[in-house]
Image (cartoon, rainbow, N blue to C red; front, side):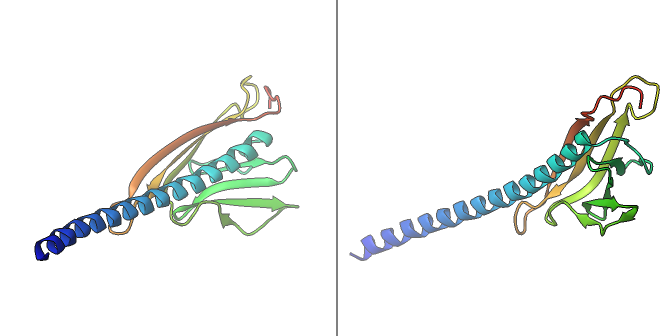
Length: 162
C-alpha cells in the first residue's frame, strides 16, 4: 500500500510539473501573439491611410517620420517617439495631441520610411516602404524576441507627375 501511494505521488508530481510547463508555454505564446497582432493592426492602419492619401512628404520626410495628406485633406505625420510609433493629425493647421498607435509591450527600436515617386517629373507612382524593427516580450524572466517587418504602400490616386 505504501509503495503504491509513493508511486502514485511521484507520477502525480511529474504530471503536475508538465501541466505547469504547458500553461507557461501557452501564456508565452499568447503574449507573443497579442503583441504581434497589435503591431500588425498598427501597420495595417498606417498603410491604409497612406494608400488613400496624397502629397507625400508635405512637412519633409526623415528616416523615422513621414507626412502626407489623408483622404479628408488633413496632414498626417507618423513617427517614432521613444519606443512607440505615433500618429499626429493636423486639422485646420493645428496638430491634435500625438498618441502611440503601437502597444506598450512592443518596443520599436527602428522605424524607417523610404519613399519613391513623390518628386514631380519622375513618372513614378508615389510609393512608401515602411521598415519596422523591435522586440516583443516572450515571457517573465525570458529574453525578448527581435522582429523585423517590412511592407509597402502605393498611393491609389494616379499621380505620375505629382
